[in-house]
Length: 157
Image (tube, rainbow, N blue to C red; front, side, top):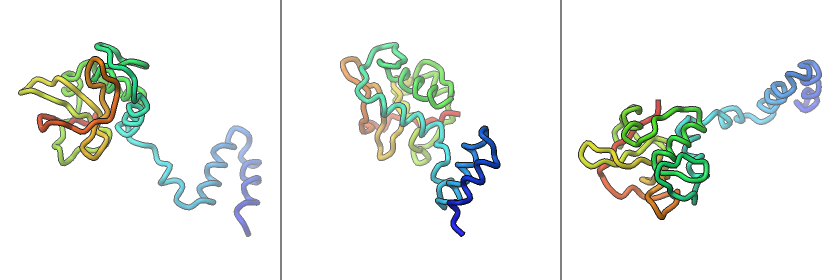
């Protein structure tokens, strides 16, 4: 017997309020492997998608979006959309993250650029040694290769 005839019966038994839940359950039965593929992305992965969607937004010192950003404004905005809270500045964001080695970094982690102990810039790691960031006045949000070894990594808690 096909699974298709069972879907209307599931929905009618479940009632109107649970129709969506029943349909999701039925879809999982009909399409094996659907549930694992549909698992929620991590906050970092969600923030990465938000930052990428802001490609081309102009840099503006002190701006936190939604149309203009500075570096830490972009990370703050992106993680806020992913349900996480970050402090305002790059240095404060570094202090609020779980610090990682470069070999432990993952897409969605923050990349902090530093000179000595001074953090001066932040972006979101996109994989392949690239970040999404709001570079400087006269530029816009873009994907760019990490250009220095003077970086630290942090994962938003």
